[in-house]
Length: 190
Image (tube, rainbow, N blue to C red; front, side, top):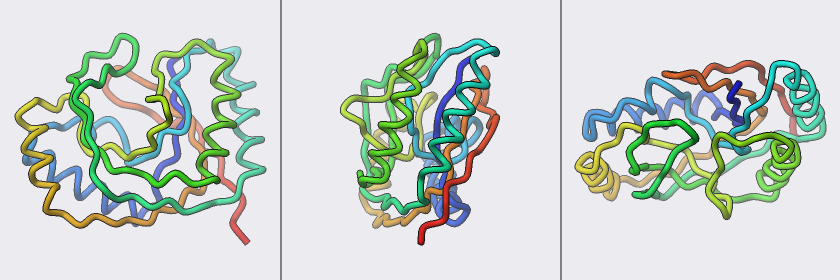
């Protein structure tokens, strides 16, 4: 089983990002960000494990969530990659357009805790190192021409989003989409 550890954006932020993804899809002809994922921040490397290891992983994530307070992240500035390789056995184009996510102490702590768990397992996807938190706008089926058109379009946009991160989710990678298995809510901030 291939799994990802992510935090989905809150409904308001997610709607703003989804609107950007839809606009970009019309310009770039890339549909993968609309069909396979909800807007999210990746928290850990993609891992492979057997069903009998799943219970321990869930317990570890629940423990992390219990000790974590919800926090905010600022999303702004458009970033891109033209050399993305994807995960093991994925067929992808090398082009990605994303929103930068501000690195905060809360995010770094969450990512480090997820790494302690994920380092015990085989990896099917390794996050860029050093950690590059982002919210993907277009990827996987993004052609070169669409990549350039999308970046040109976004240059004129002033994007500033404040997102609340209030959970960690475990997501199963399936051939054409990713399915959330479980979500562990964080403590409310005081």
